[in-house]
Length: 296
Ligand code: R5P
Image (tube, helix red, strand yellow):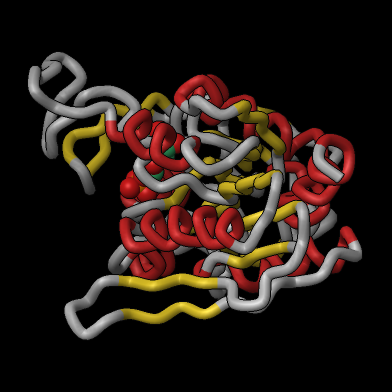
């Protein structure tokens, strides 16, 4: 049976549909003192597939409860799909406002701490487009990755003018290349990015001339939106024609969407690894393929 975390109910249903596997009943509740309770009353299967984006801290507790609940209900193997893994960007000791030059002592590698907790009651973990490919190594359980990035090309309009698929930093260049390959044509390039604080970045423009061309900005995550908004502003100044923004994980914290629209973006597209209004494509097909080939 497929068990949906509260943040991934549509995606879990889509995965269940792709696989022809039943969706388990779930309840999300809390006690008067604020403690959470996620349960799957009536779960009745030997294999449990939990699909749960850990977009926030409460979602992590909920996932741990669902893992325990299916074991209590007699599941003998558990697969955990993390469509989006919260805390993954804290993959080194880091303090708010820290620059790359300083590494404080006494700070956690939070990504590893979360990965270890998630590993305790699962046999396997599947990550969708993790922030770094080697994040599988953070888990004590066996972990693999799938990519939903090629699907981001689907909602991009046909007939873009000399399109440039541009990553806001070098780390996202491969992702931009993946979307370009799925689209079928275009140039790939990247900005140089320096993060100034949690919600401010400095970008050095890419070498590609974008004037009178359509640009598709591609990144793995949009969190505060500062990276993308800064890139969009550069592209507007440089005479780009249309500016489209594509990301796998639309975290969209606080006023991120408003920042992007105010910067002049034409369209924002994302997958449903984080379920948002801009989730135009689903990560369900690659997740279902991985489950079918390795777990069922
Ligand atoms: C950073 O390495 C990531 O790829 C994203 O560029 C970053 O997480 C985006 O953050 P924000 O939207 O807060 O600028």
